[in-house]
Length: 102
Length: 172
Image 1 (cartoon, rainbow over the protein chains, first blue to last red):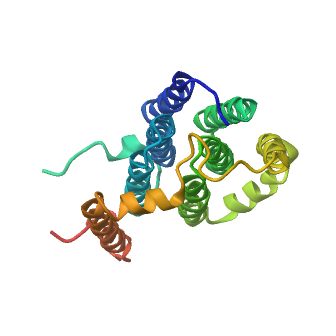
Image 2 (image 1 turned 135 degrees about the vertical axis):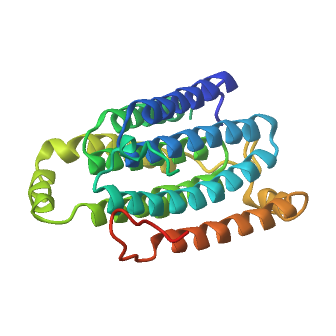
């Protein structure tokens, strides 16, 4: 079986989370921002499953299922918003929608 | 078994790095799918086979298909045809293919390993997860179903066709 220390798995989760955060902060294309959010959610799931593996409890995997359901709901609403944004501004630049009404 | 974890980690981080640095959305999507498959291998190595299967089916399958649909809907016209021709060049698919072949090699290696005894140390069986899911976490499951329903209704509301001009978005 796997004999990797828990710290290495957590480092992997932290690196993936950091890359997702960089994608959200640096990219201006709104599809890449959504991908960055997916990467961050997935990295959190890695940490939960690593905890489930370390302490032999099912709770971490249960939390991963909740993250999965949340990511599915989030991405469906997010992509519908992307389509509306594109029809309105004819661009995928997140900065195009920087003014509020009123 | 440890080497599988480390190789998958390198593949996942490399794939995610390529996602962050690509300019073409479809290239990034290919790398993201490979990265998610690598994370599924990691879940399998961490003794969570059910979660690994769901990662492939829901993340690499359903969610990525949604992204592909949206990118297809936004890339209409002659620009898309030019892009289509560009996709067939080797530099487009050779990176994800190499990373995917690494994962395939790991899969073949795992299949050839002797089958561990049921309930081996560290692994949590799908049965335990199911019992926890519909025991102490029942309220959470119900809330997740309400969240998914809200996502369905919200996406349907936002995605309905509107013939308003660019100045008149949405009715108040």
